[in-house]
Amino acid sequence: MIDRLRPKLNSVPGARGILQASQTLKIGAKPGNAQYQYTLRSDSVDDLVQWGPIVFDQMRKLRELTDVDTDQQNSGLQARLVYDRQTAARLGITTQLMDTTLYNAFGQSQVSTMYTSLNQYHVVMEVAPKFWQDPQALNYVYIHSNTGGVVPLSAVAHFEKRIAPLAVNHDGQFPAVTISFNLAPGVALSDAVQAIGQAEQKIGMPASIRSVYSGTMRAFQDSLSTQPMLIAAALLAVYIVLECSMRVIFTPSRFFPPCRRQE
Image (cartoon, rainbow, N blue to C red):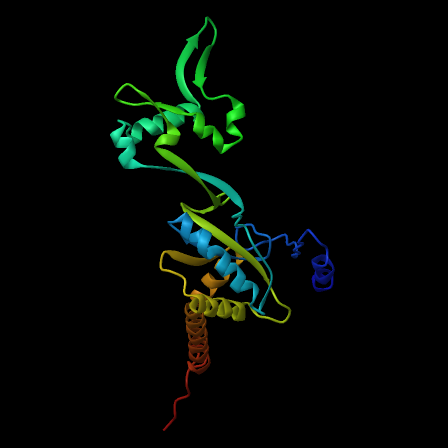
């Protein structure tokens, strides 16, 4: 049924539908848009922003996989403040002073507490909401330098617009990107794992990015890791059962002692 509905859903413009079978008992606890999940973890968010789309595009080209999707969203905008250290030092502005000024303006700094007979109220200092809507508001921020003068922020710093992720997902304590996928018709799960491993070697991911399987795929790998032990235990159990059976068959019974030859 999913194979029949997939081509019809893919032809709908402006939306992308992914179908998966709903099961009462599920192996693995990690949710995803498809049945299997492949997770990239790294200490650096910038590495995930760079390599996440590369791995996603490479997995979409594999014929063993279908319905490949990712939870990474890199279409956000970010304003990064870049300041001139030499100019700021010449004007008597330190990094801590600049950080305190920006936090008082945009970080909702608590400056006082008002006490009444029943309640207490925190006084928070911030700029007017109309200055939150545009990064150009940084041009109206002034810093009181250590020399006693007032210096505009634009004299020692400027901001740059960059692409940034809308949200940073985590797997445990590390930033992560999860790629979900389903298997193509007639493809075994072991073949898909082998194809993904070959794709990793082809693109040459850096050592700072670690790839792991999560959800159902992790449970599948755990079962494969213990499969030799299970086979050995099964063979040992069969050997013990056969050995006990042979002893019962060929051991003389105490109720029928062997006959003695009479002279």
